Amino acid sequence: MKIELNNTADQLTYPNEIQVSQFYDDVINGLSAPNKYLQSKYFYDVNGDKLFQRIMELKDYYPTAAEMDIFSDKTDLLISAITANNEEEFDIIELGAGDAIKSQHLLKSLIKDKISFTYIPIDISKNITDFLSISLPVAIPDIKIEAINADYLSGLEIALSRSTNKKIILFLGGNIGNMEPHAAVQFCKEIQSSMAPGDKLILGIDLKKNPKRILSAYNDSTGVTKEFNLNLLTRINTELGADFDTSSFDHYASYDPISGACKSFLVSLKKQVVIIRNEVVNFEKNEVIFMEISQKYSPNEISHLAQLSGFKLTAALYDGEHDFTDVVWTVE
Ligand code: AVI
Image 1 (spheres, protein in one colour):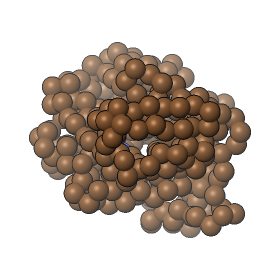
Image 2 (cartoon, rainbow, N blue to C red):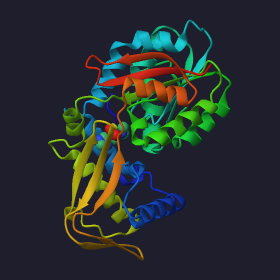
Image 3 (tube, rainbow, N blue to C red):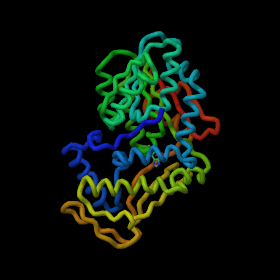
């Protein structure tokens, strides 16, 4: 099933005033910093969602196919890691569910095995939660679904308050990589502290590998990743009334194979001034805006992350190429 992202005017989810003022503050803070930056969570407006769908279909962008390989080929291993012969009803909570295309393999197999669960996808995009509430019961008859339209942590709080069932939390797609390593530890600790003994987290993490392969994934030959980054400038123009000339910025990706940090930047191609409402932002020629980190981990670094955040490693599944891993961590 492929998600159809609607773009007719009545189906768009327009940001409310609070969201717009937070967006404005974050943009101004980032562009006033000595080293300019923008937050990658703002990539995902309606057009950004579509561009990310296109990225996931690129040959260069291996993480999606690699994780799909794990969910489609290792479903039985995943099921035994999460159920561990436990017959109790449980909740599967997916943080940032998107089109749920990978988790559907797991959901279908659980239904086929007559294992009882409720699926709770959480997504910041109402377009997506509405879509899942309608389409999943068609694709997977008998599924119990309670979608929540919220960000990761507030959605998780709502989901946890709804039932006392055992919880399996899914955080897939390598989204953890979009946090700086120290923030990833904090995030995992926060999730761990909201879970009960026996609850499990399935975390999708992109692995360190041949640096050239990683760099090509973020510097694709078709230029979609460049468009994806520039789209945030267009979003700032549309939603915050700015006057970025996107043709005066280029995209640059870098990867440090030692730290595992893959970083994306936009580079100002000339000395220029951009106006955002009443704020004036000056760019020197070749000055960069740091746009996104996509952190890569080694298996040892992943074990360390589990330890630091208080989880016990239950299983680690890999795709055939060992490009990507889905780990199952348990709260003891
Ligand atoms: C959503 N996230 C895991 C993607 C990544 O690989 O960091 C976002 C992305 N940025 C550029 N390409 C894909």
